[in-house]
Length: 334
Image (tube, rainbow, N blue to C red; front, side, top):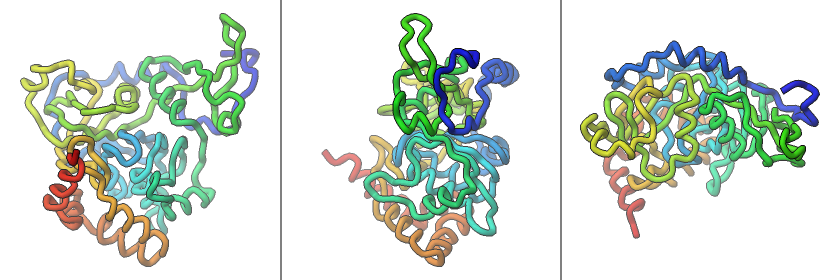
C-alpha cells in the first residue's frame, strides 16, 4: 500500500519485516526431504535458536506449551530474542527468567496480546519487572489480530484486512494501519504478516519426519508452523510413519514445516496437556510466590531451572511420573 492509502496508523514498532518475497525466497532454500529429525532438545535449541531470533511459542495460555524447549533456551543463555505474546502465560514467565542480572537479556522485544499474567492464577511479579524495566520494546495487539499476523504469513501475503481493533487504544499502540476498502470505501485495519524465525510447538504425537498430530484445538499452531522459518517440535509420543499414513487427516503439522522432533513425555508440564494431564497448579503457584522475593526467586530458579541438566531432571524434581499420573487422573475426571 502507498502512504496515500493509509488513513491512520498505530504508533507501535513493527518488530519484524513484512517482506513476503524475502520470506518466500528463504523458504525456497529450505530442504523438504522426509528425513529422520529426531534429536535431543539441547541439540535442537543449539542448532535452531540463534541469538537475535524472533520466537513463537505454540499452544495457548498454560495449555500445550513446549516447556522443555523454553527451559533449554534459558539454560543455554540465548540473547536478544523477540517473542509473539499470543496469550503467553507460563511460557513467557519462563523466558523472563533469562532477563536476570548475570544472565544478560534474553528478551528484548515483544508483540504483546496477553503477557505477564497467568490467567486466573495471577500476575508474574518477575515478568512484570522485566516489562517495566524499559529494556524491552513492545507493540500491542489483540489475540485475534496476532493470530491474523501468523495467518497472513502462512498465506504468503504482507497483510490481511480486518475490522478488529479500529477505534481502540490497542490499535493506537499497534503497528497496524487503517486503510480504505477498495470495494466499499469502508475503513479496515491492515494487519501485517509475522514470520517468526523459530517456533516451538508441543504436540500429542509425531513421527520421526515431523508429521504431527494435535488432539483438540490447535489454536493458531496450524498457521504458526507454516509461517515460521524453523520449527522445533516436542511430542508426548513418537509414532511410526505407517501410523501417520493410516489416518492422514489427523496430521495437523506436516513434515516439510519441521526441523527438529524431540520426544518429551510430559513436555507441557506444569502446563495442561489436553486429554493427557492437567496443569500442576501447586507448582505454578510456588513459582509465582517465589518471584515475590529476589532471594527466594534465585533459589527457586537454581533448583528447578538453572541447576537442572535437562527437562527430565526438572520433571523428576517436581514428582516425576508419580506426579504426572496424579495429573492424568485429574485431567480425565468426568
